[in-house]
Image (tube, rainbow, N blue to C red; front, side):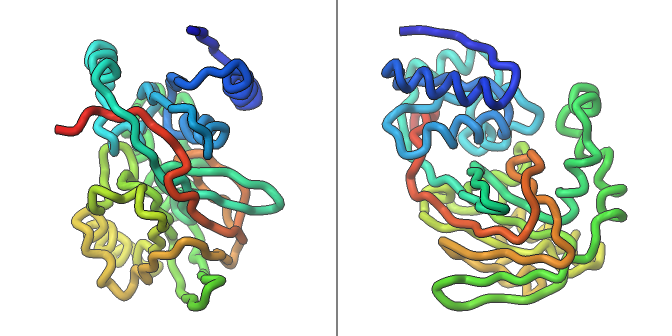
Length: 267
């Protein structure tokens, strides 16, 4: 069975996937960016159906992390030879609601950045739209007094302008966190601060993230947990895969191997 739909809002998009599942469809080609893929993942979570990502967004972080081709002919050729793997999903609960994320959940500078970058900028500059507004976002972002609490024991308290929660390997577009090949399949979330509130510290830790050396930086306050609670003062919007959502406080957890995805064949 083949059916193509082009929903014009998130509710219609979710409804289309649910309808397909009800009809017994097991293969879903999802064209869009990370926000669209995350919505699909939420509906397909824990099911036997397979998501086939077709990169069509601005950043396409999830597609980059899987090394999916963006050109149509190469993508079509890949699908004919691809195989299926299971991936973890990050889950966030806040203000009585729940959402999933594929790549990252962030609070701080990126929360401000999401408010500054509009659709016109995305169409005009593409991925560079984020860089255009980055300096302004860093100046506007407040200093966060942050509390991390692990229900199984342990916690942390620090000040920063940016908190990052990573589920997979991708950070933004083609940028990787330098994690191992099983990231996104290891049943854990990685949490860290992008340094202390100073610009110099943020830049230093950001550079170390890209070569996977941030774990040893004391200003990163690195943790690797399955579940934790995040409190910040002031409360701030949570950015999930580039989409603004609810605000802190929030509980983060991971659903191990909860999403089946078509990926390129192994080399």
